[in-house]
Length: 322
Image (tube, rainbow, N blue to C red; front, top):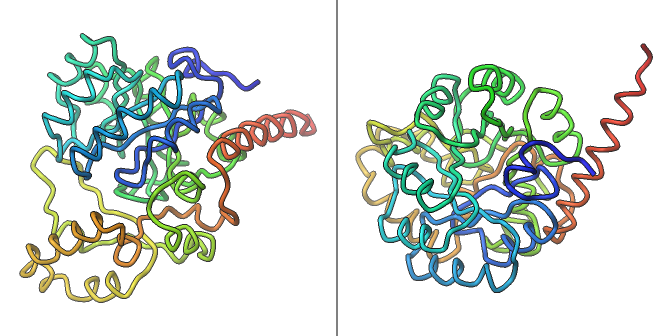
């Protein structure tokens, strides 16, 4: 079995974390990943608070294993935070802005670890100063909001900058070869989204999953106009989402000034699409690993397959001629 210090810290069998992909995460997805020996993650935002409460309550009914709850710093909701602290997951994960020191302290006071996602070495150092327990170094190959540096360049720099805090690699990873590569770069595990989005238990709708199977890596692009309609707060990270091409994206990529003027209307349309599970029609957030994904699998099988593939890849690498 492939174990790292991350496994010991989190009480999991495989160093594989399912990303907290907002409303496409379900209690069933989280529990299935955790039951398979990984760390499942429930996304708290952006989703209605009652829906979040229902999924959060359901998870302990489906698994006794550790799980995480993900919050986006610019969209922190105190009611959702309070529900999370009360539920006492093993981990609270944060993204898209500097981790609030008071939230880190509250989590630690409840016996909860804090995991934080960064896109630059500077952000990693800031997170370390705020006493987070685990740092995710996310490359720009990732789906959802990401920065500009690739995982291959970013991960070892973050490992060097924040040691001995364990680093988790994200972006461009969907199979065991990616996990093996992350470990060689110095990471203690991986955080992956797109591969789990194309799983049986994930929400988001069948059309989105089928689009992932049909797409190549070059069919994804950074949605540059996103920050024109969702301006990041002053303490937020400079990121933009990666998604599959759609007519909506292609239209507004070419009309960014108009997007700024119509920002309120476009925000409303996008949030309505999230609530109606039509996100895939407008901005189907998807990473470049789409080109590696060719079938929809149960999430537990994804975990076990990645772990087995990584062990095989590392064995083969160790047999290289000296």
